[in-house]
Length: 365
Image (cartoon, rainbow, N blue to C red; front, side, top):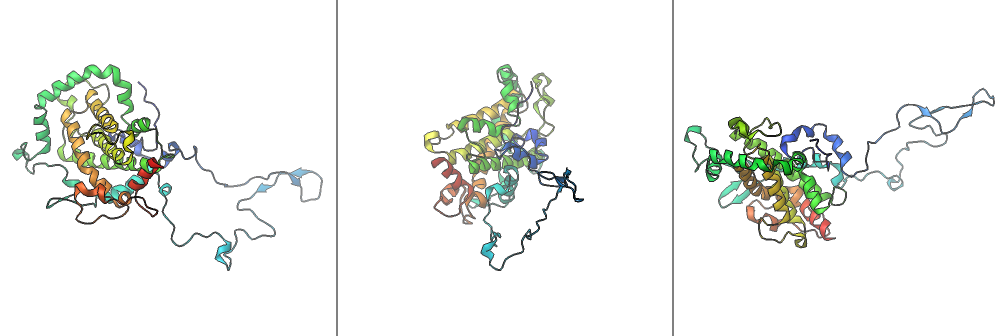
């Protein structure tokens, strides 16, 4: 089945399994509601607006070349800087940063640069991006008590039980195949469909979701490299996934991390009247994240324990994401606890603040 068109400028980054779509990110803006096609500049010789009499004085007219830069006979252009700076719109020494100076894809890389430096407190321990999962130092000594992957597999009843679960889930493929294939590279689009927002209508909300995608991509690839779990089809050919399985390893699920991170971001931004005040893990955004993550199991490319691990990583990473200075509106106090982050983010009050406060303002008028 053919995959539909991308829904937003970051859709090429959605769902790490389609990460080749990140190549050539400069073209992503064309899908982001910024006016369509590329921008062209006056280069080379073109015909003038109208024909002129030839220089030899004859009445016959001809086209002459339209030059750029133009040559004005009585005006110096571009002008020299005048004595009075107010006479010429020269940029002030300090230019206020604008969100639109960076595409959503490139801005998400700015956030990633901050994310890897953030530290929060959890009791006496420091919480950082590379402390979110446990891996036994010695494989021979790995147990469910010191290795997260082994614990997650055990909690699902063991490897055989997980493979049996995937064989059961295969019966749902016929009904959801189109949706599951579209979600390979279209996570933001599903949340946009739920709330009807875009980079044009709610730019800070969109950029926040883009940052969640990028951070989720980074985290899942890091931990996939740490745990190196084979995809289900390598252990059980009967699962017969309808798509080519991604070449990288399975645990944790990137779709799960990214979807639940976006859900948490929207819960923190969208007013309660749109479903953000429901009980924990009951918001429509959380339910949509569950659907996206579960369909990866239906396709047979992830184990249930991959999905559970991705959700846990997303929840642990969410406070770190909100603590990034561009999102929080500046560095938070060094002793900020992970469960206090959202309470310490400055609210929008007539001065420069971060993406989170501005995203909230987009939904409250």
